[in-house]
Length: 155
Image: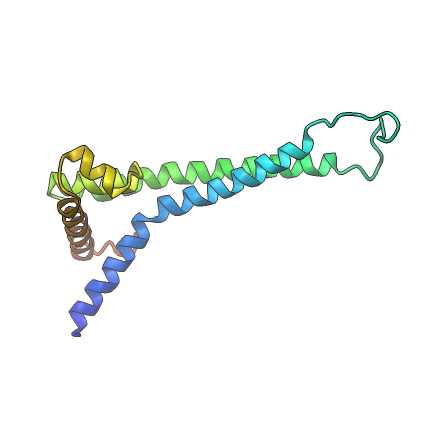
């Protein structure tokens, strides 16, 4: 391969990674929400069996630590949600650089709205293969535009 082809492939890979950051953040948020929900379930009151359970908490009671961990996870989730909102705005502006409206539509539906290609193709009334072609050409055109504008540092 020649140098230009290698550079183009690298830029395309960076574009895929850049656009995929929303989904990556969403996975992180989901993971933290699952952890938080499980910890919260540990805070739910249990039925008291008067012959076995302690009625008062002891100094070794971990409820306070668990509640603090839940609050910490809530803070982390909120930070990631704000970061995701900023990233959605940034990526939306990047996609708007494309000239072709159908490429914009496909990339927006896939990356911003996180629709599977199958649903995107149903929504725009194109075959899946045509939708994939629009998707790939949108990525190619976006990588070319960003390379021409010297915006690979944004990625």
